[in-house]
Amino acid sequence: MTEQKKTGIESTLSRILIWLPTLAIILFYIPNALDKLINHDQTGKVVESSTVMITAGVFILIGTTLFLYNKTILIGTSMLVLYMTFIVLIHMYKGKPSEIVILILMATIFASYIRKPLLFHQKPEK
Image (cartoon, rainbow, N blue to C red; front, side):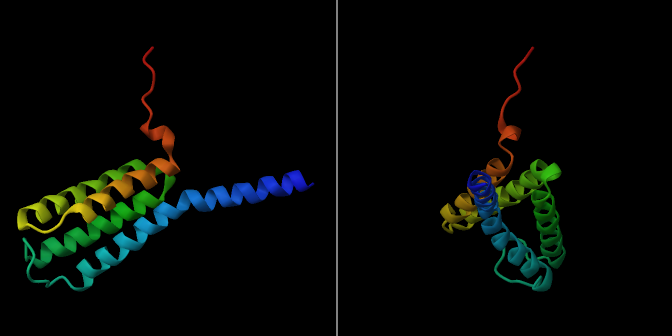
């Protein structure tokens, strides 16, 4: 009985630890997307168009939703990484520090890998 209980606790703890990096990533992307949707008339950006800001916000929300769903995690990760790659390039263009943005990009890939490691393995050729 205690063996089963220990396995249940380990399973729960394992599930929590697997989803913890994803939670950290989501806590970054959701406010960022909502800020772009609500406060779309931001100044000081490379592209100051409201349409681009709203489109970016919708793109981030769709990518985040796909990132959360296990069957579409690869598509969601690709969308979020594509967005963050453009942000890294913009930060480099403007001379802003881009290290934190690169770390967020890597954390996105890491969270995806933690949840579905088999997606990142190459299939052996026959």
